[in-house]
Amino acid sequence: MSPKGKKYDLSCCPPPPQRVEAILEGLEGLYPDAGCSLDHQDAYQLLVATILSAQCTDERVNKVTPALFERFPDPASLAQAGTQELEDLIRSTGFFRNKAKSLLGMAKGVMEKHGGEIPSDLNSLVKLPGIGRKTANVVLGDVFKVPGIVVDTHVGRLSNRMGLIKQKDPVKAEYALMEVIPKKLWTKFGHQMILHGRAVCASRKPKCGQCALLLYCPFGQDTQSGE
Image 1 (cartoon, helix red, strand yellow):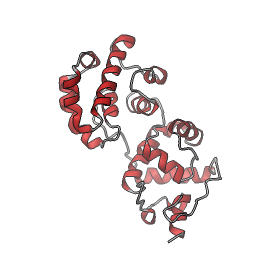
Image 2 (cartoon, helix red, strand yellow):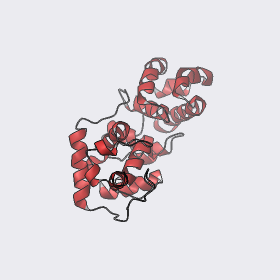
Image 3 (spheres, one colour):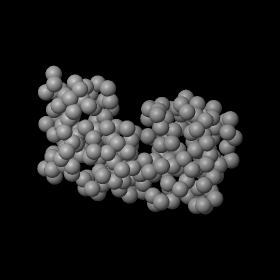
Image 4 (spheres, helix red, strand yellow):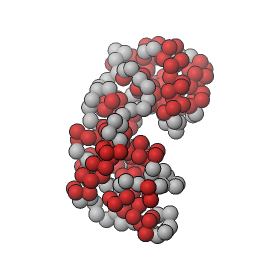
């Protein structure tokens, strides 16, 4: 439902190619340099940072990871980390106990199954403890240059509002978007949608009247028409 209580129309699935193209062109115009905002130097660092970013800002994660990577510079050292020390280092990112468990499980899995090297394929990544498709796609797209659509809360929300898909489940949303967005744009599309979600299309108070994509967004048009 829109903020005005009026249901917007998402019956046109898949969306018209012309509208998809217009949205992609609009995103490119707004965010031509969109990329990963988590500081990292390699796949290991990005994997760790992405795990920490769950329900936490990238800015906060970037403040935590320098000390973390200095203490645990690779999967081998992280796999041997003490739980208490690790929790203390990541405490400010929130949900630190679960995140510490995921980090330790991931590192041990990398050591035991991949000889200390972060795997570069989706199937291997998602088999590691604490790693889902979203986290795997972040690493694949930004480190290994393997196209993937990252469906976080921003991408899922905006994609449904814009009528690109009609899926709330993140995995189903990912597959649905793969049918709509050209593969070569998958990684950048995710980054652009995240930036747009943060800057304009917020969950509770979207700035629809200021949105450059309003003309192509059923949700935004519905919101404006109800004012």
